Length: 506
Image (cartoon, rainbow, N blue to C red; front, side):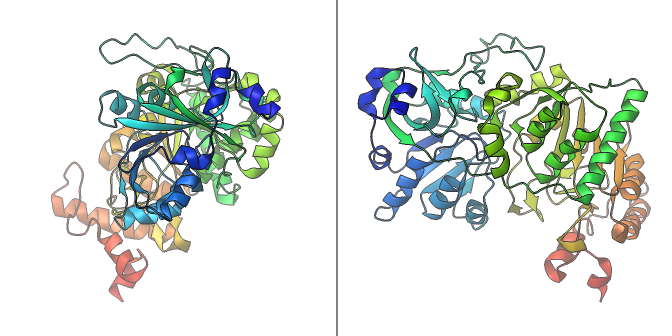
């Protein structure tokens, strides 16, 4: 046996369980509900799913796949395109599976990420026949040490009938010790989660399971797929500067200090770029309490701005992967990975007073946000953890560019085509045009701030025209709308490839 494998496998009685990926994949049957480790392309199962892809070339079978969040291409592209996935939840982020969801070939359960553990406990998800879990090691005392994400793995491991371990020896051993695995008891028997500071550690270093559940161990050396985020551009830097000025105003008003409050930044290029903007600011001793640690977080640790960062996964670009995992000891005492039902727990978010920064696809003139559906019908990725954070955060901030498709689409519309975050959960909106602080405002008070401060200049007149006519048509109702026209911008986009009104009239 390879010395590195032997070192990572602390329970020697499990050595007899080492098999090939094909042998492990053969254990899974048609119709099984399969849990997989992984959260935003990090710590995900890889070699066994690819063995399932090979098996599907000669055999028709389908499984339901539940994870922490999105996985790499092994599952969300190749396994999906092989026709193996019947149902998928609770989040995805690959064009391959997205196309199959939108064509109706795969059923997709889009859900708040903090809710999934409860669905497993209640048996709504399950029974889970197999969990495929990537691990960096199994300790002598029986703890499975995840790699660079935790996600839903602890609850899956508790309720799964069987477990397949992908022991990934390409991940650094320095990952051992950065996890904080705390699993709440069943509802009705649950004590308060003993955390009052995001820097606290309240759990175990790994996932404790009955070794008898482990049916197979497959050795892997496959790296995580790199994050797809793109570098900040001029407009995202402008958004970052706008947000930093907003925080300065909050400090002047006495609502925040120079350390702010724990920061959460959603997955994606815009939110990551906004967080990157802190690097050259005066803010310091920052704490991140998020669901994903992206490039910006490690850049801020290097810049001496972030003193501690907790999440449920680490998702990095290829460049940052080499930098961070090649020198993980430098960061190990400053980072912590928790189960997603803890990182995204609504009560903890409110208790700790998080500042939440997430990305919108579109928003309307009253502050409702669509973060999932293109033109109301086509799924993009999913709601992810944005709902967990936005509703419960001290400050629920949504960022987006004011336009898309070169200006053919306005990100601010009369009525969103799908509502993920109601106006009640949206405190602040930021685009490259400016900021709208909606706190304490009635619907009609929000309209001028959103249109004048956040909308693209090409669409301001069109938005005002709709709103003024809506006020006149409804007799100045609480939330004026012309129902026959409220979604006309999306209809125009479908017909004419633009939301601009003059094209519809041409």
